[in-house]
Amino acid sequence: MGQLSNRTIAVLSENGFEETELTSPVQRLKEEGATVHIISSKAGKIQAMKGDHEWTISVEVDKIISEADADDYHGLLIPGGVLNPDSLRKNEEALSFVKAFFEAGKPVAAICHGPQVLISAEVVSGRTLTSTKTIKIDLLNAGANWQDEEVVVDQGLVTSRSPDDLPAFNDKIVEEFAEGVHEGQHA
Image (cartoon, rainbow, N blue to C red):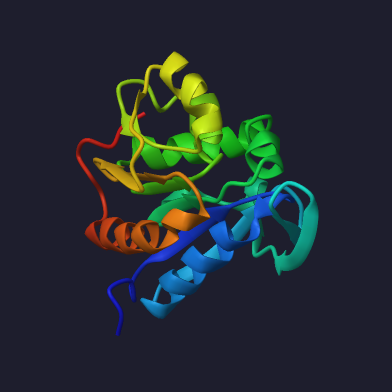
């Protein structure tokens, strides 16, 4: 029995997610006993990238966003990659799904470029987080307090900079998802 044996976690992603930023956290969540659902805008499979150019593995989608309900999940994970967050932040259903986790006080984790989705969901103002340095200015302009740390936790919001930070990120998401609702987590 892992720490997350009674938890169901949503992983919101599109094509172009950074491979290890989805596979490593998902593996860790499953090792801790969580049920994990890959959620995307279309049924079928989504494809990973390694870096900015190399398409790699495909991952089966469990649910499409229009059929997913944040009430069914205990936490949300948003992997990075350049293309994945860019697609998600243009999708109103995806942004509403993200906002629902913040409104319910549920833990949310985003890595690398993933916080771009949080900017578009308008949930970063006044929050402390990190990301890849390339979106630091975007986060500051959206009212966030940006820190250059391997993992930053702010009332159930867990963020990291890059795949190099995955060991610390994975440890923290397990901890925060296990804790559940955070009073300070808000939209």
